[in-house]
Image 1 (tube, rainbow, N blue to C red):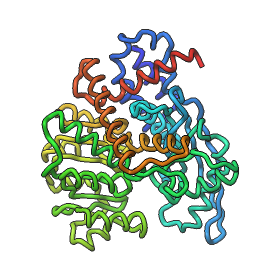
Image 2 (image 1 turned 45 degrees about the vertical axis):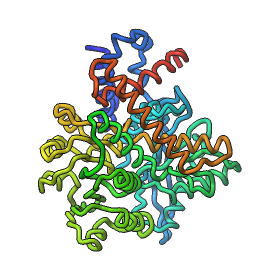
Image 3 (image 1 turned 120 degrees about the vertical axis):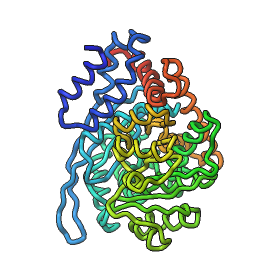
Length: 451
């Protein structure tokens, strides 16, 4: 067997139940095959096997008490995967689907994503199977404090800097940071995604959506295209989806759909800035369901259907797609439907939202495809900028942060394109992103010796 196949086989043998992790490893490792001959020093140092094994896996019990006095127990995770180029960095996810395999897949992806940003950040991820949906603010606070009572031992501004992810927004970050500050008796940049009043960065809530749109714009430009007059599909309705809509609107496109875990809406007239303002209030303040949008604006609501199912079943034409909800939301069948309905650009706002079968469809049909580790790196890039501002005890303007974000996304696009050309598959952003991210980390690991 080849070096790459051996690594994939060993991962599956050692952790047979961690399917999402297997998928992430397989996708990355198969595209790294061209580096084996070009870098025999990586093979000699066994870097391919070393990089798929996390530095450490932390699991812990999280007991908390609800408003009725009932005691609950959830499971907490932090996987510190690789810190070869900087402190561990990666979000916390609170969602019932969270398990060790999902956290490992997210942490593994984060290594390469963070490497691509050009900032000194390693890869990590964490979270819990706690579901904040339907909980009171008091219950969320109690859980966050219980979670941090254990996590604080393993994080720090120069060690591991968590951020938000699904189920962890500004409210949760505030509760988490509040207890960390109390326990440690220090005010430091140990969490990102903080509110502006206590060390957060402008543009951070918008960063992932903005970044995915900037990356898509760079891809479109390689074919002499832009967003003006284009019809765009966006899934999800959280921060990433919200600010993807805002930036697409600003660049002249029209977004026609959003979704949540209950269903999807199609608004053929487009979700303009006025309607988006309602979505922000609905999701961030009222914490309502996307069906309320359909009731208010007369859009069509599809119960228990994903955006991609609706596009396939209704034959809806779109030029570009931004899967921004969760992993594996677009399968091969839905990818085929997107291509059939005219989609020629996919920029991933979520982590690994396309299955391997969907990715094959994109590549076989010459779709401009920005994989999540490149396209949605704007969020962690701006987290890195927040870390820099915290270290320097200053705050940059909105315009400066946005300018730096745009520069980083252009740099990521260039690195992916250059690597894809260097390794013989120009325009293959999957291969380009994986190789560009890997080589930087691998050279750092090589420099440290066997540690």
